[in-house]
Length: 339
Image (cartoon, rainbow, N blue to C red; front, side, top):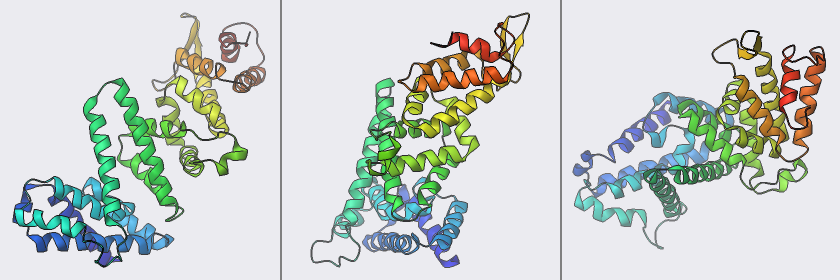
């Protein structure tokens, strides 16, 4: 294990150098050895991908190393050779002899040893992803931002699909790594976009739907972590969350549960004549109303589920009809069909 970690650490250094000026001193032999090193790590990835405990131990050690963005997790070993190749192809500082040798090293031809299956396919995949993301980031504006979210959501689902065949916990590890390294606001928005993709929302057909496994992996990640779920339900706009709640019943119930908790944290201010937060982080009355109203404007049966939740809480709180006595009484008056 220690020898493997040492190899990963050294390759992290190679990957970091590959996009800088130091490659001026590289020759064809250096490039060949660097690519062989990356393909050795690909072999390591395939060897350990299905071995739970050994894979988890190696994952923890790799994450503890830090390293460049291209090699911060066990899953990144699968595309290490492609990332190295792209960095060298884009680096104008690469010595001429090494640059001339690089194409033949990447595409050795039909007579070469085919033990390493289709390295060019991984190279093309990484190139397409990187080019799309860089183009969208350069455009700016609201429309490109939405396109960027969709692209990131597609990439996330594609990566979850790829990891799904490697090890049961690989997808969860990827999501936790994204959450830990951030930016969290963007991670949550991408997760929301991914959950809105064209997947059959009916549980009876979920197992047969395209992308259903990735959707369920995302939902489990959200619902299993109170921190992530709370941030998700606070971060995303009310209309987006209403759409998600309409598609995913488990998320709807969790969202309603959080709205219930947030409602109970407000108190009625007699002088101001409305409900106010008791802590700075509490959800304001106006936002609480907006989120419940958005849920009520979603297609049925979501509206009735929301109204039933509010009515049940109103009854448990004393079933008052006078405004200002119970927040549930006042909330019911603001909702379509609540009066």
